[in-house]
Length: 591
Image 1: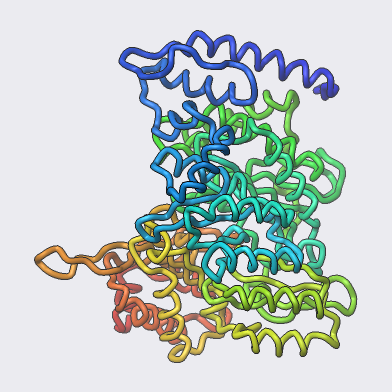
Image 2: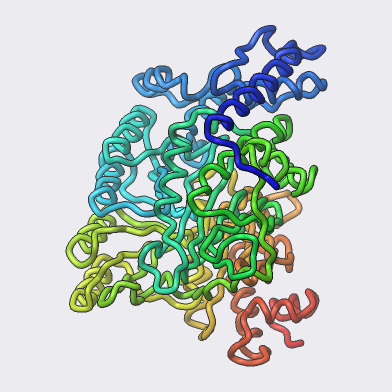
């Protein structure tokens, strides 16, 4: 029979284990042959686990990734005075500092733009109307007059001159928001249920758990400087998908039924290892935990990752590869060692089915669990809003709703708490602002990353091409089922193309014997999430961007003409056909 340790015992064991860990690592701190590592390095304080992990790799004769060396030479959070000096001199950073300044949310995005981009940190994607209007004011004062909603229910401000970098991040803090930890080797913005606290059928309000994890990360330096970026999501069972299965850690609210090893009630189920850009979705660990333990368990998982993650190969420095290398059981034992107690498991037979999701629930008017109130989902053109639109949305939220702005992972937003007699006014004002609360089945599921207009990694203008695809297809194909089309510009897959019904990843397409190239894509079909979780299959390579709208029109038309019936989804349709048949459909042929 296992017995939980007391808080004092846990602290003692953690300190004892940490001391042993550091003592052993101290022997490895001497540089390996031909290594340029310093002959001495601190082995105490919050950075000690990271430094010890670096030393272990060097002791094996391996070469650290440049980013690891930069972190060891100067921790980014120790370099704020130099960041201020650079901005005072109106200078953009060289590569090491470009990496460091991402810890503060500043990304130098040359050559796409000779400017900074600033990414915020908004736990559960929820902020109030005056903060939202305040972000618009910051963009107008110090950047370009627009902002993007990201696929982590977050905001980005772009086209920031070098001299304004500090102005932006300090102004964000004055709003009660933050941009720290939103880039580089850190735990990124924590996502949560978009209808948390208002969803009619949700199992759990994720807001307090997302908020607690956010503040834990912000105030625990040991959780920065990870082997690579890290994503955590909380899904409460609401109608709008949170895409927690694409995260390193996913907490899914579930109802445990009678007969399990735990009392009946609502718990979090733990899923691990999601990273859709690497063709993997998070897998169920069998672990179920009380929601109040989520922060403690997430902390232990991250600390195990700090010890075990690859510090030499950035392409393999994600939790997925730790799990692939040692297996889930061994990794969970390492997590339990950090916790000082076992994690509870519950058989799948004692977990009730989760509430159904609605792929249109993020657009339009929907009743809340509060009698007489509704929320309204607003379609944004692939996540972009002007600052004038932002201020008007903030005013609508204040005048017609409860004042909250709820960003979603679908690159749009919700206004909540609208009484029935204010809905028409809100709809009219949204339309007058040049936005819409309605969307076609194509635009409702249209996702695009920043693209080559603002990201040096992107091989294509994803946002521009996404708009072109929607404009072409929605007047030619009368869809009666939602279809998600995701465009991402590079292998980082910020727009998660592998989980789209149709997913496109940017590629340079050669067009003549001289080697000239144009924007293009590799085309995938059949991806999904949640109950339909799947990684899409590659259908065609090297499709010129100008040809993509017609190919997608052909696929959608073939779906409507050849499906088993109106209830068959596009994903099910593509799964039932081989690639050769689907390729024929894409070219306008018939099977």
